[in-house]
Image 1 (spheres, rainbow, N blue to C red):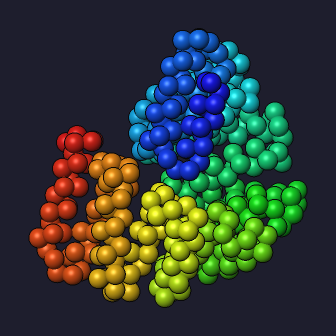
Image 2 (cartoon, rainbow, N blue to C red; image 1 turned 90 degrees about the vertical axis):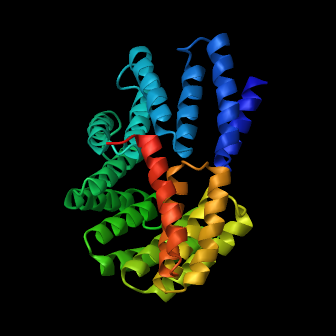
Length: 333
C-alpha cells in the first residue's frame, strides 16, 4: 500500500540509503498528488520528506524549490502561525544554510523564533531548538558573540527545565563548545566537550549516535589544540563502532574515515592517510556520485596527501578534476 511504501522510504532515509529513499518518495508523491491532490496534508508531507532527501543527496536547489512550494501552500491553507508552517520555515532555512544563503536563513530563523516565543513560550522545547538553530547561523555568519549569548541562554534554560543530564541539555553543551572553539576558547571547549562525552557514555552508552558525535567533536577540539595522538585514538574508536553498527559504506562511517585520514596527515603518516583517502573517495563516488560536495572534498583531501607524498602528477590530476566539476556545477564566474 501507499502508506507501506512511505514507511519503507523513511526507513531507507534513516539508514542513509538516500538514493533508495528518493526513488520511493518520488513514487509516493506522484501517487498522492494524483489521488489526494497537491494541497492535501499528506501530499505536502511527502513533498517535505522528498525535499529532506534531496538535501541529504546534496541536491539543495531541488530541496529549496520543494520547500518553497510546501511553505507557500501551508501558509495559505494552515496559516502563518500553524506548527506545520513553522516547521516548513525551519526546513527552508536549513536548505538556505546548505546553499550558503546564510542571510536568508537568518531572516527566516528570526521569524520562526519570534513566532514560537509568542505562541509556545520562551522555554518550550521547540523554541529552544529554534534558538539553537539561529545560534548556528550566527556562528557561520561570524557573529560568534551573538551565538555564544544565545547558546548560554539555551543551556541555562535546558538545565533548569530538563536537568543537567537530559539529551537536549547535552546538545546545548555541544553547541556552546563549538562556539567556544570558533571564538578560539579551545580550553573551555575541551572542558565542556569532555563533560558531554562522559555523560553521554554513562547515560546513552558507548555506541549511541550522540555519544559517537561527542567523540567526533572532542577529536576536532583535540586537533585544534594540536593533540593529534588523542584525536587519532578517538577517531579510531568511532570508526570501529560505526563500521560495526552502520556498515562500511554508511555516509557517517565515510565521514569518520575521512576525519581519520586528515589526522594521519597531521601526524605525517601519509601512507595511512593515502590508503584511507582512496577508500573514502571510491565509496563516495559510487554512493553519492562524482559531483557530490563530499566527493569533491575527498578528492581535495587526497590531492593534499599526494602532494605530501611527492606524487605531484597524481595530485595535479585530481585538482584539475575537482576544478572542472566545480565549473560544471556552478559555472564559470
